[in-house]
Every structure is written in C-alpha cells, then in structure tokens.
Amino acid sequence: MLAPIGLTVYSRLNHLKRTIDALKKNTLARDSILHIFSDAPREGDEEAVSRLRDYIKSIDGFSDVEITERQQHSRIKNNRGGHQYLLDKYGKMIWMAEDIVTGTGFLEFMNNALEHYRDEDRVISITGYTPVIELPTGYEHDVFFLRRFNAWGFGIWRKKYNMINQELDQNEYRMKINDKRFYRQLVSNGQDIPEMVDREVNGLTDALDVKIMYRQALYEWYTVYPRKSLVQNIGLDGSGLHCGVTEKFNHDKLWDKVHGFKFSDEIQDDNRILSANRRFRRIGVKRRLVEHMRRMREHLA
Image (cartoon, rainbow, N blue to C red):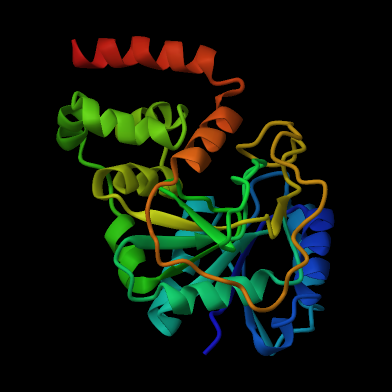
C-alpha cells in the first residue's frame, strides 16, 4: 500500500500550483491518495485563502483527493492534526507543504524507503531533500544518513512519530547539555541545532523538527537522505511565515532517477558527509552561535 500524501496549505496559490504540477508528474502520482489540509485565514487573508480553496477543489491526477478545510486558524494544529489523522488511518505518510517542488522520482523513493526501513529502529524518518554538498568520491549508495531531521517532504511511520511528538523535558535537557559527548553529537549534524533546541526547551518555539533532532542526538536515530535532492523548497523567497530570503538551499536541478533506488543497511555516521554538512550549514551561523552560548551560560547560572 502506497503511503498517503499529506499536503498542508494556506494562502500561497502560485507556490501551490508549482508544487501540484511537479507532484502530478511523479511516477506514482495516479496511484496515490492526496490529502490536503487547508488552514483557516488570519484576519486580512480571507480572500487569498478563498482563492486557494477554490483551486484545490479542481486538483486531479491522483487516485483520490481529499480536502480538509479548517474553521479556526492554527498552523500547528492544522499540521499536527493532519499528521495524526493520516498516521492513525494508514500507519505511515508522506508530508509536504505548499512550497515543495519535487522530482519525478520523489514518491517512488519515499515509498520504497518507507518500506525498506519500516522495521529498522535506528531510522526515524525519510526525507526527499539533500543539502547542497558533494558526497565522497566513489560513494556507492543512493542514500546516506544524518542525525538531522528535514521536513521538506518527509516520510514517517505512526509508531516512530509517536516516539518523537512529545514535549522536551527541560530538566533532562539541562543535564544532557553539560555532557560533552552529547553536545558533540548535537553539533555534529549542525552548529545551529543547539540554539534551536535551547529555544524549544525554553518555550520560545513549538517545532516538531527541533524535537526530533534533539532526540536523534540523544538516541542516535537517523534520517535517510537521497544522494541527490528530489526536493526544491521554493518558499525561501520571503513569502513564508518563518523563512527569510536565501538561495543557499537551492539546487541547479533535481535528481532525475525514478526507479531502482539502492538502499544501504550500513546505518551509521560517515564522517566525510558529516563534515560536508557541517561546512554547508556553518555559513551565517557563527554570530548566532556566540549569542546562543551567552544565553546558555545565563540559563545555567
């Protein structure tokens, strides 16, 4: 059984049209169920949301299209309510936002990976996005592993979702963050992670991806990445609620592979890939890292 596709939408109609056009070109689109979760408008956004809702009623190209229109605005409740609905009904899902453009092999890769790693305790999620890094010369597999969740088109199973969709324990965090080995694991997948976890623990954010990344460092859980990106996030243009303007994460082109993905069961860190990922994410992080360390010292004083 193919995983259902969950798509969270709000008001960015032009982004959504590009997302749908690309998704319909996927090899498994016509065999897949698309569930669209439309958040209710904030004051002033009524017309934009109404136009988008008119459009989603016209979408075809999938085995079925189901639409949920929320009556109260809440981005978090719209997303997590959608997560829970799909996982309770199907046991697994592929989740996207309205600004995620996919390669034609995205659904094939995600479904195959969800099946391959279904019973692998060390794998917590699948992602279709790959950072802009070079893999080591001679790297043979179509996947690699990082203890860093990525939500730009991700797949997950109900059992594993329920393990990570919980609030972080502040006391546990304060104890673990002073453990040098744990801190090294946390920053090994990006120097920006400790700052995000710190904000999450102190109630400044409510971000599922941050909750997951903290537990990935704690329990050595991995996310499966494709060797080349099957996803382009087109929302980093200032139109999104939490995203600025950057081209740093953009790929010149997406992976054109659609069949025969080669998965690896050597689920572990590859220090060469870890280093490349850290270098990629280090740009622009240094100033924020210094400020984060200052805040940490204040919290722990």
